[in-house]
Length: 260
Ligand SMILES: Nc1ncnc2c1ncn2[C@@H]1O[C@H](COP(=O)(O)OP(=O)(O)OP(=O)(O)O)[C@@H](O)[C@H]1O
Ligand SMILES: [Mg+2]
Image (cartoon, rainbow, N blue to C red):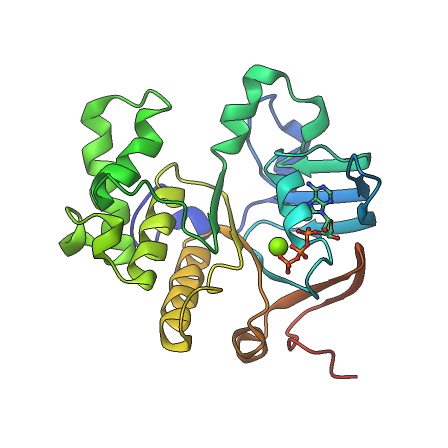
């Protein structure tokens, strides 16, 4: 996101023909944000967590990834953030085959992705502000740019007033919003949430979902793995279902449970 306002121009549809003249950098015009082609992931213990998965996520999409525990949702996410490599097939992020990245290219690609988890993963001894700032400090962002960038994302998630509190002094929802701010501060093009409402009560879960919808409205592609049937069914977004490592459904405007 290049602007903190929901009306930012980053969501403007782009011309597909621009893809042909794509330079070697991370320009994404016309390319899907994410594509998996025949992806199989077998862990070293022999467990096949994903089997021949094919999917395409266009820029600006909002996708729920559903399926029973052990279906492979988190494994798929680990492949997309290149924490794991596919055993077979290709994972393509913004036109780049993740298996073919040079080591020095990985941090740059990772910054195109913001990710949050069920268990927030905040640094307990740092304030909200410092948790978010840390994400920029580790990438060598000049100090003069860190303060304004942190203030901007704290405004987006509605935590400006809590900026000096530590995670232990926050509610679960506020902790998740801190994690979301931290994930947003690099202006990601893809926002991934792995069961982000798993530790939150229903009311707070809805607030987090509203925030993810706003992030999506800013033009950021959102992929959310969840067991939250109520949220999925209410929002009628694209639903990709995994079972035993396979894509068993991919429907637009769908409910959590298959309706046919
Ligand atoms: N590092 C690993 N080594 C071996 N097997 C693994 C590893 N990580 C996950 N698995 C197995 O791969 C399968 C898919 O796991 P994964 O965590 O992707 O499921 P999930 O859909 O995210 O489940 P949940 O809804 O419980 O989070 C499971 O059978 C799991 O036990
Ligand atoms: Mg999981």
